Amino acid sequence: MSVLGVVLRIRPEHLQTVIARLTGMAGVDISQNPGDGRLVLVMEDVAEVSAAAQLGAMALWPDVLGTSLVYEYSGPDAPAPQAHHEAAQGWRTRLTELDTPIS
Image 1 (spheres, one colour):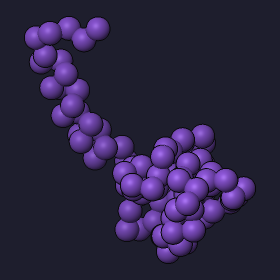
Image 2 (image 1 turned 180 degrees about the vertical axis):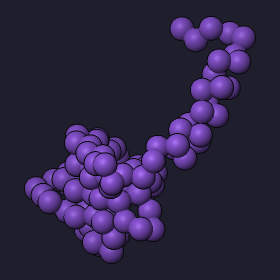
Image 3 (image 1 turned 180 degrees about the horizontal axis):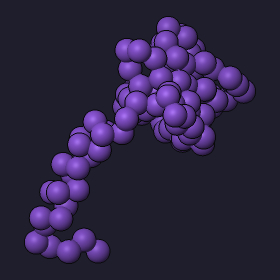
Image 4 (image 1 turned 30 degrees about the vertical axis):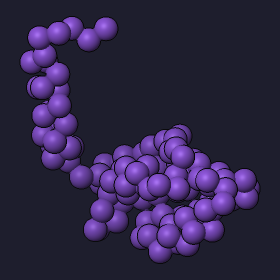
């Protein structure tokens, strides 16, 4: 199981829309809402989706300006990282095959 502490920065005029969307998401809890476009979330894995996958999806929402992972815990009951390793290995392989050095 993974638990994430996240700061979500939202366009202030869309704050209530995003809050409504977050409220319907399993494993997502709004811990603090100062009302200025920042939200502090506590997220945890659920059977359907990991907290990390949900955070990645939120980062792509048009009303979200940014996401900051400020805390992460993965306990002994977390799923084995093999599946994530295999998915990430693809970009590593492609980067090592580049002819041009990255500067």
